[in-house]
Amino acid sequence: MKNTALAALGAAVIAPLGALAEPGITHYASEDLTLIPKIKDGYALHFMAIGEWGTAHANNFVISCGDNFYPAGVVSEQDPLFHYSFENIYTAHSLQCDWYPVLGNHDYHTDVDAQVRYSKISRRWNMPARYYAKEVKLKKDADKEVKDKEKDTTKDKVLFVMMDTDPFLHKEKADYVAKEMDWLKETLASASVDVKWKIVVGHHPFCTVGPRINNYETIAIREALKQVLDVHKVDVYLSGHEHSLQHLKMDGYTHQFISGAGSELTQVTTGLPHCRFQASEHGFMYFSVDATRLNVKAINMSGKVLYDTTLTKA
Image (cartoon, rainbow, N blue to C red; front, side, top):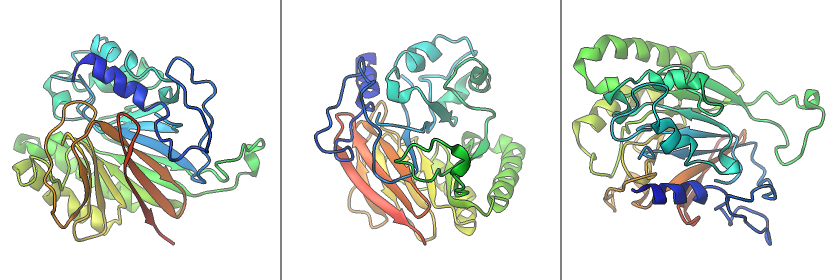
C-alpha cells in the first residue's frame, strides 16, 4: 500500500462511523476537527485497533496489533520511519491520543527494543516493555462531563494484556517464552476484582480463515495460548498478522478478533463454522466497552460499518 493510501486510512479513522453519531451531525476533514462532537452511545470506553499499518472517531486510545514498521522494523529510536510511517501519517485530531503497540514479526528484523525506547520520545507511543499490562478504568456516565472527578466512584475496569508473540515461533527462545507465559498466567490470575473484561493482545492469531489457517504459526500460538486464555476467562484475544478483518469463535471461552487490514490485503476463506465475520478490505476495528457490554465494529477505510457485534455479561 503506497503512502497516499496510508494517508487516506489515517484520514478515514477521523470520524467514519456515521451510524454511531447523532443524526444530522456534520463530519469534517482532518484539517478541521475541532467541531466533531463526542459520541453519545452510552459506553464508557472507546478504542480502535489497527494492524499491519507499517509501510478515527473519538478514542480513549489506539491499539496497534504489530508489524508496526515495514519491511524490517526500525534500526534505532531515531529511525526516520517513526516520522514517515507513524507521526506524519496519523495526524488527525482524533488520533492524538495514547497508542499502545505490540511487536510483530517484521518488527523483529532489526532493533526491536528501539520501539520500547521510542516511548520516551513520542507523546503518543506507549510501549514500556516488549510485553506489558494495563488496567483501564470504565468511567461512570461517559456521555456526561463529570466536573467533580471525586464523585465518580466507579471501580469497574478493563484489563489489557499486551503480548510479545514472535518468540513463540522460535525454539531457541524457549526460556524467554517460558518467562512470558509465567507472567501472563500471573497477570491474569491476579487481576483485580474490579476487572469486568479481560483483553489479551498479540500479533499472531490462534485462529484464522486467512492464508495462515493451518500453518505452523497459527497452530503454535493456539497450543501455547488458547487453553490459558480459556481457563482465565479472557473475553477477547485481539491480533493482527493476517491482512484482513475477522471475528472467530472456536470452542471455549475466548473470542478471536483480527484487525490486520491497515496496509496490504490477503484473501479470506468463507463458510467455516467457527468464523462469524471475515473481510479482505482496508480498515480497522472500533471497540466500545462498559461494565456489561463490549461492542466491536469492523470499519473499512471509507467509513462503512462492515460488521457490528456485542458481547454481553451480567
